[in-house]
Amino acid sequence: MNTKFRSISIAAALAASLGLAGCTPASGPAGGNTMPGMHHGSSSPMASMMPDANADHNQADIMFARMMIPHHAQAVEMSDIMHAKPDIPAEVTSLATRIKAAQAPEIELMTGWLKTWNQPTGMMDGSGMPGHSMGGMVDAEGISKLKAAAGTDAVRLFLTQMIGHHEGAIIMAEQEISGGKFPAAIELCRDIVTSQAAEIVEMKELLAGL
Image 1 (spheres, rainbow, N blue to C red):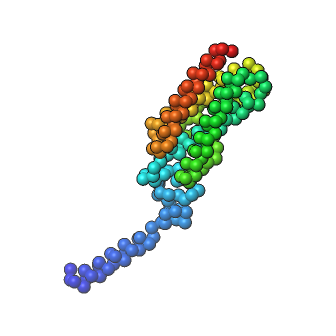
Image 2: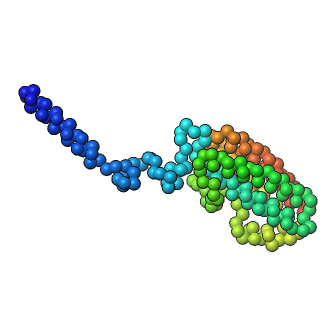
């Protein structure tokens, strides 16, 4: 092959290569052919839930905060229900006061984390996400029964529901301790496990004394 013919062949090959590159479908909405795992924009739930690998938190931290916020919020609601009732033993109203005093500030703390991480702060439903649970949540019927109950019946129902609620919170906290990355969240979870386990013992003793 002479030099002139070789030059023409190389030029033709380059032109063909450039032509193919120009015809490759664009990634993203305009091309309609986004590659798996690529950023899909702010409208994609998965894209918004996946922090950078170098971030100080991971998806387990995000899911923990998003699920523990409504879990805590229900404990505060149940405590408020008991505070509104007459003739409730002082040791029970004291417990309700301590539960609210501990968990309401933790809601604010976790909400602040989610805002810092640019994550949704709205309520999640009770189904959670695979590998994560919101155990111990009281359904709407259970909350209605607590509101309607009075006296010893109200105390027994509150303690029974809150024991299950605390047990669910401990499971959630243990999941975060084993799978989370954010140091403050892991520290909070260690506190939750310790304090709520102690309150479970206290509530069982109160139940036994009714």
